[in-house]
Image (cartoon, rainbow, N blue to C red; front, side, top):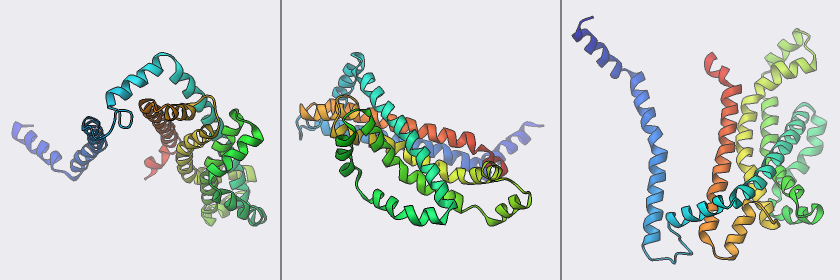
Amino acid sequence: MSNSAAHRASDALETSPGSGRIRAARWHLLLAPAFGLLLFVAWLLLARSGLYADFIVPSPAAVADRWWQIASDGSLLRHTAVTLREVLTGLILGIFAAFTLGYLIAKSRIIAYTLTPYLVALQAIPIVAIAPLLIIWFGAGMTSKVIVCALLVFFPTLINTMLGIRNIPGELRDLMDSLEATPMQTFWHLELPAALPIMIGGLKVSATLSVIGAVVGEFVSANAGLGYLINFGRGVYDTPLVIAAVFTLTALALTLYGLAAWLEALLLGWQKVTR
C-alpha cells in the first residue's frame, strides 16, 4: 500500500462514526474528575476566604492530616472494620430475606395479598424511628446495627425480585412446561437468569443503603464504628475528624457499589455478546 493510500485509510478511520463515538467516550471519562477538581478548588477557596472559622470549614490539608493521624494510630482501621462487618452482615441477611420473600410473593397470590400491606407499612416507617427501638430490644451491640442495615436494604431487593420474576414472558414459561421441566429446573434455567438483571440493579442500590443503615445504628448508640467516630468528632468540634470519617464512609460505599457492578459484568456479560 502506498503512503497516500495509507493516509486516506487513516483519515477514513478518524472520520468514521465509530471513531467519533470513541473520542466522545474518552471526553466523557474526563467529566467526573473535572467536576471533582472543581469542587476541591471551591472547598480550598472557601477555607482560605476567612469567612468561616477553621473548625467550621477546615482546609483540605487539615482534613488530610487528621485522616493520616487516625490511620497511623490504627483507630481508622479499627472503626472501619466494625462498620464493614455490620454492613456486610446486614447486607447478606437483608438480600437473602428479600430474595426469598420476594420470590414467594411473586409466585403466590395468597402470600402477596397477605404480606404486601405489612411490608409497605414497614417501609413507610422512617428507619431513624425504628433504630432506637431496636437498640432497646437487642442492645447496643452489633445485632441491632445489623438489623437496621438489613431493614434498609430489604425493600429495594424485595421489589426488584418481585418485578424480575413477574415480568418473565409467558411464552418462556410455556416452553419450560412443554419440556416438562421441574420447578427447580424452571427456577435455575429460566426464572433466575431472567430476573437477574433487575435483581442486580436492586443489589447496587442496597449496597449503598447498607452503609447508611449501619451508620444510622451507630448514631443512635455505639462505642465503635465510623458513625461513632463522626458522633465523637461532632461532640468535640473536631470537624476534620468528621470529614475524614465521612470520606471513608463514601469510599466504603463506592467500593461496595463497584463490587456490585463487577458482579453484574461477571454474571451478565453474556447479554453484551448476544446483542
